[in-house]
Each structure stands twice: as structure tokens, then as C-alpha cells.
Image 1 (cartoon, rainbow, N blue to C red):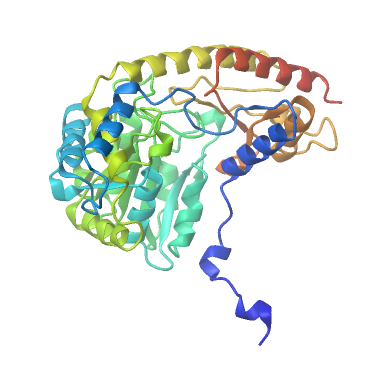
Image 2: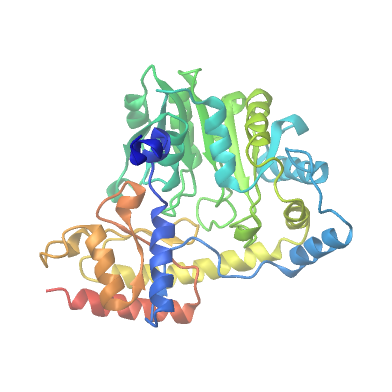
Length: 401
């Protein structure tokens, strides 16, 4: 037998590609380890430490012997805290059978897609989009359908665009607001307009990725599509987690609230993949949701300060167009004005490579988010590092010939 044939991989895994953001981050780390002076603005991970009271809760959980399997869908105290969070912060009411705790919001989304997508089903993604959405859909044998909005439209898709993208194969729509990579937020009126379109299509499930809701300084108070269009409650899966809000990326706890039937199917899928999320992390997440929230305000204030500095600097650079972000910790400037000045820099990938090689600055090309001609800058670094990054970028831009 041919060795290559014997080792042939499944088609589903061959359809996907590794995460571009992790690829850039890993490349930057390799260069740093090789002795290069690299500033990375590539990965969306808070630079703050996990707050002490959350760490203390995890340590206490170990001392209390909470190191065994838990229920697949999470411990009851954490699920109860999530229910309280949804009720008090989002005006959404769920029962215990409508909550599922998973190993990160990423797994929550994958569980949802696994539960609702059949081969050939289409899932509409509003672009620019988080890099993992299309590949998770492909892993579930679905087809991603990309609906794009550019900087002239504040990176927000209109109701007319959404309606035009819907076919008889459309099974789901993913909405990420506030957005990674753009930092933009759909306001209540815009969400209501999208919701009116979806109300006409009772077979479509909505996945609302709310992971950045707390790091927001414009369009407050926060609203998701169910707040704007309550009639969609029975077919919307609301995704959230503790990673971004509480600087707990490595703890891997995400959660959903949604229709009991779909959440039950997601639980079944999770039972045959990871089983329960880490027990110790669940107790830490419980402390995060029920403890002092001052840490969230402090982090958001720091992100806004960095954002304001970076936005001002970016808008002063020749060839750069940029919008102020509503929140998150991302800026998403257009670099189209800097392309084709040098034959070796004709697209956002080559521009990002130029910044890495010439300026020691790691950014993620917009093509990774379905938006060629842009770059994503992540300001989860100190102000001192951000000032240095801006100086390097200015010098690199001035040197393009």
C-alpha cells in the first residue's frame, strides 16, 4: 500500500488552516528567542495579571479538594452565577438547563456549530470577522458565507446586506459585537434592523459572541441582538466568558445561555470531547463573576487610555486611515495608502512582513479577518512599549520607497 495513501488525513481537517494570530505571535516569539528586539501587537491577550481574589479562589479550591470531575455542563454554583450575570447585566433570563460552561468561549462556539450544522448548511459571518469562525464552520462540514463591511461603513453590515446573503441553506448567523478585530459595536438600532430581517427567517439560529462586552467606552450601556430584538430569544445562543474581562485567558472558561434544546445538544457534544471544563478554573470563574468588579473598570480605563494615544498617532501617519474604536483592545487601520509604493509591498501581508523585518513590530494582516488592506494592532502592552511601537512604525512608513 502507498504510504501517503495509508496516512491520508480527513478532508475536514485539510479544509482548515492554523490560526493566523497565533502564527504571527509564534513567529514573533521565535525572533525574540533568537535575540531580535520584537514588540508584539499581535495577540488579543490582556497584559494584566489575573486579579488576586480570583487566584486565591483557585488555590482554595485545590485545598478544598475540588480537583475531580464535575458535571459536564459545569458546577451548579458557577451556572447560578452566570444566570445572575445574564439577568442583572443583560436583562436575559435563563434556567439551569439553558447554561453550558465550556473550556473557553471558542469551544462554546464550536459546540454550538456542532449542535446545529449539517453538511452543506451555510453560516453567515459578518466581516471583518474573528479568524476562527470560518474554519470552525468548515470543521462542522458547513459553508461560511462572508458579508463584508469596510471602514467607510464603520465595519458594520446593513440589514439589506444580511437579507441579500440569506438563502434556503442558511442555518445560522454569527454576530460579534464589540468586534475583534475592529473594536466597533453595533448599536441597538442597528441590531434591531438586523433582527427584523432574521425574524422573517424562523429556521436561522443566531450566535451572539459578546466576549468583549465589558471593555467598552462608547455605545454604552451594552446591548446584544436579543436586547434589541427580544423576539429572537428562543433561537439565539449568547456566548461569553471570563478570558478577556478578567485577564483569565489561560484558565479556559467560556459559557453560553440559550434555548434548552440547543444547549442540551451542545452538552451532549461536549460530553464526548472534553467532558467538564477544568474544575479549579470553574471555582476561579465563580469568584470572578461574584467578586469585586473594580478590576474590570481598571483594565478598561487602561485600554481606553492606550486606544486614545494609538488612535491619535495612527491618524497622523501618512497613508493610514483609522476609526476610533468603541471598545475592546484593538485598532484596525487601513494601510491601502501605503501599498504599491514599493513593489515588494503590494498587500497587507507584505506590509505586515515589512514591519516585522524592518521595525521589529509584529501585527496581524487584515486578510486573516476577511479584510485585505488592513492590519490589526492589539494594545495589550504597556504604554511605554506602545510609544516605542508607534515610533518604530512611523520610521518604517517613512522609509518605504
